[in-house]
Structures are given as structure tokens and as C-alpha cells.
Length: 221
Ligand code: BG6
Ligand code: MG
Image (cartoon, rainbow, N blue to C red; front, side, top):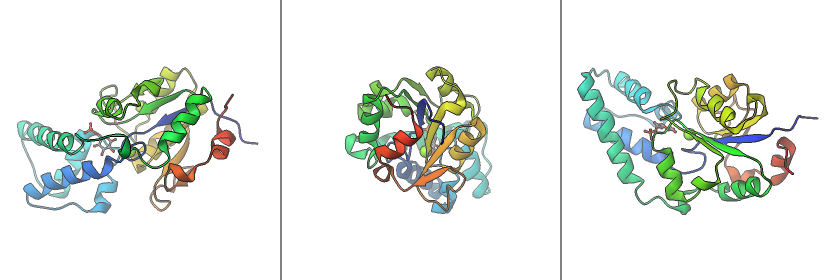
């Protein structure tokens, strides 16, 4: 029988809330303004990746070099555009099946944390009115090494007071799945099996995950 885990770590963008498309819109607009385009396929490589790394990657694709002040300005304007796009975010933007899973874990006193690359994470959770449910929040402001480095998940486990191999991670990004694997955590991919094949399990969204699956993997009381 599979050993049961004690805690859960959620990625944010693309797992809890449908913000991944807004990151794409904002980066794409920036690329277009610089005279090139980015594809959905390229966008997969940006998921889970920090703001700085994303911009470096995109400028590389466009074969564009910028000065440090220009780099900072591009990051700032992308983020302003992104914040504009998510300014009306509300509970309807929670991805299908998320709220019931959070409620279920909460009811059964399973501690859970956020492990996100985003520096906007806390504001987003507040906007969704679910920030109070998390035992710990670790985001892009708390780490020095971006996913696929496992740092964000290791800090989350530490804050939860559990060993890394006692955590179940939910991730929608290749970089995030790799980070969970490197942290020694069990990982559920949310999205496409062809993209997230390195996760232990893959579901298209949370509405496909029933309480039986949760009980099978997590110690509920
Ligand atoms: C990740 C997203 O969660 O956060 C990436 O998947 C994003 O697309 C990264 O670039 C950083 O987010 P932010 O909000 O700090 O720009
Ligand atoms: Mg994500």
C-alpha cells in the first residue's frame, strides 16, 4: 500500500486560478511591441518560471538585447499590464473543482501551503478570498532560486513542519513538476498528460480528482 502523506502544496497560476492565460496575453503583447510573436508552445516553457527568467527567455527567442534599465522597464510594464488584466479577478476564476478540494482538506485538517513563483501571489489569494485557508504561503518574494529548482517547495514543507517526502504537490508547469520531483515530493500534474508526463499522476483539472484519490494519498482524520 502506498504511504499516506501529511500535507499538500499548491502552485497558484494555472492550478488554483485561471491566470496563466493572462500571463501569456501580457508577455505576447510585449513581444509583439518588440516586433515578434510567441507561440502557445513557447508559453509552456514560461509556465512556473520567474518573471526575470521569463523575460530573458522571451528576449532570447526574439534575438533582442536590451540594457539593464530597459530590461527593468519591460518587466515593469508587463506586470502593470498583467495586473490590469487580473484586476477583476474573483471567485469565478478559481479553476473547476478547486474550491471543493480546498474545503475538503480544510474540513479534514490537512495543512496546505502555496508554493508559487509569482510575486503577485498574496494579492491574488486575497482577491479570491482564500488566503486565510493556507497554513503557509511561499511565493516569488521568498525565494532566490526559481523553479525547476526545488527551493520554493522545500521552504513550503519547512513552514508546514513536514518532511519533503510527506508532501503532495499540484502543478501545471513542466518546471514545477521538475521542482517537485527534485524536492522528493509526490506530484500531481494539472493539465495535459503529454506535457506533464513526469508527474506521478495527471488530471485535466480538479473536477477529475475525487475524495477517494485524496484519501488514498493523504492522511485525513
Ligand atoms: C508563475 C507563472 O506562477 O509565476 C509564470 O506560471 C509567471 O507565468 C511567474 O511568470 C511569475 O509571476 P509574477 O506574477 O511574479 O510575474
Ligand atoms: Mg503554474
